[in-house]
Image (cartoon, rainbow, N blue to C red; front, side, top):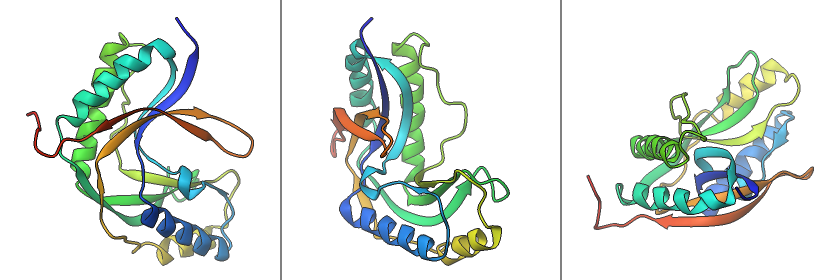
Length: 198
């Protein structure tokens, strides 16, 4: 086996949506919410977190990605609403939700889960939690003031954006640094508009 790489498969966000997230984060900060905010340009819609993969597994994962995008047309989505995981009492993640053709995103995530488990002969296991289309915009490391959190959720609960069309999925390497994660693209698969398999 070759070197291990921490990796994930995701959809990039266009600049207008990054700007919407930037403004949302600024509004939440001004409301007094303190957390580790994710840089908008580093936010992705994760379809499959892989964890540590071997370099010689990249080509097999790329094949699965290519097969995946051959089965769906470009996917139209938009930002909609905000929330926290796992719940309001002990929040750990602050997220922005997605709406639109999210069932297609779930279909892609399921396919990637099953097929990557197959090509890595069960070394990378499928995610058991149901797919929820969301974007993590902040991580909560300490206890938040509940009234401020509730007020922030209400203030941005009706958040929406213009729709965007996802036409590519990317394989990224993630390197963790004190200043935040640094991502390097390892692979890309583009959705075909006219040729879609059943």
